[in-house]
Length: 556
Ligand code: FAD
Ligand code: NAP
Image (cartoon, rainbow, N blue to C red):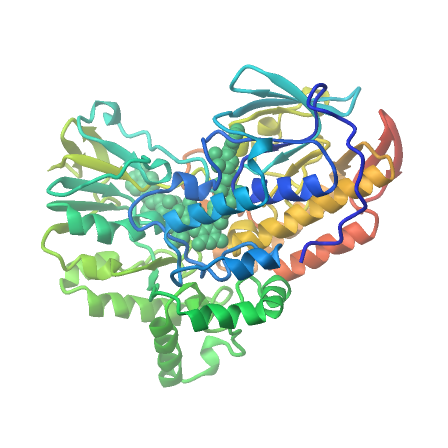
């Protein structure tokens, strides 16, 4: 449930002279934030560069796109009416249905009137005299706001690789994260997919069914487990609905990743080979992301991790008929789970189709895109259409695109040039009254993100309510608190196997990006408690100011 709602607070601003809060982005984070801030009586403007709500689910319309956290859990919990009334059709809802849900939420809570679509936020500058932000948008206008909240998404900045010759390609080029709104038909076409992350792994089986020939260019093999997707029965839905309060509570407080699931009591090496195989087999048969939670030490103990990785490698060898192709598909350079594990429907079996060819571009790197294909390892491949499933400049990419200037003209991009620095993933010192939702330094992408989004939105709303109640008009993370938190986030990351992979969690997919493990791996329950404690101690580690330049409460 949302945290307690402070008494309605009088808005200090009106649209004429600015807003209390500007929110950037109308995905699940921006939408819920708008709803909560309105509850405080504040004036809010949401800017969204797309022309609809839904964020991720508005942009990622590629074939096979669907959630990989089960829909009964990958959904808002803030309104019991909403969770009781919405009928998810499948265990993992497809993208069009999740987008319909986002639109339903926008209508049900009457959100659209405060969202300005087709408008990008380009710049935000903090004025130390008035403790307000000036926000400049792509329509050339500038508005002021006391607070700015970046609900810009962690996986919202699609990464276009800089392949030589890409601009000269004569066929259609699609990025999974920027898929057209019109249906794309590959029937009878020769298609190339570059990338084998979650987006590729979802789309490849469906593209293979349409295309006359599919080339998959793989740089790093990924671990994928079967989704076992199926239609949800009325009884299954009802079982969740009847138990939602407890399921949601456990997901928030007791699960590291915000997904209610059976928790392992044992480590992988505590059981015999035979017992392990039975357990992995059962999880494999059940399907889904929780495969890596079969044992409690898979993320931290390499020997334990190897048992899970070996099991998946064996499954790949069982499914894929050509042993050379199976070998190429078997991940061998990172622990399982250290890159985001994928969830698929018939991914590995797709390589048994005669029209699908896997090309190893680690051994034979892509040299250039040609007008009718590409060259890799000295060999030319001809195709009609190119699908870039090359991922995102994750966690910081969309923030970095906004020119953000804080105290004394310091820019956020300059401050974060050696890697993002935040206190609790919520604020960065030197940038007062600027919040980030699911920012680096919070559990964010390591969790069921709706759980993390709701937690941040509730915390930020309560915090703004607290400030308004006490007439504080400026809030900022202290340097000491931020330094301590950054060190803690790093320390915890290095107690796990996660930093061992060249993952987007580490920024490793973007040439030149600093290698920092960006999310906080302490778990959503622990993190929530830390945030609640900070708030209970009058926002310890944040400095609050009652009037311009008059600091009245400083704690660290
Ligand atoms: P987003 O949904 O990314 O929304 C951010 C919005 O901000 C976007 O609409 C963007 O256009 C807008 N924006 C950004 N910058 C600007 C700007 N400067 N000006 C104006 N607007 C701007 N998570 C899970 O937990 N479970 C899943 O199963 C899952 N599946 C996923 C599948 C895919 C294909 C992808 C890409 C991600 C998936 N995720 C999943 C992560 C997903 O991003 C989150 O679950 C969630 O949707 C994020 O919501 P958000 O509102 O924080 O960000
Ligand atoms: P991704 O996991 O980053 O995968 C990108 C792929 O492109 C990788 O295989 C990468 O190879 C490859 N690649 C990038 N640049 C390349 C280049 N220059 N040459 C060759 N290959 C290149 O991106 P994603 O698949 O879009 O997924 C991102 C995240 O979004 C996921 O991890 C997940 O959190 C979320 N998501 C979830 C779902 C879901 O199932 N619900 C679906 C899609 C996305 P390397 O590994 O070698 O870098």
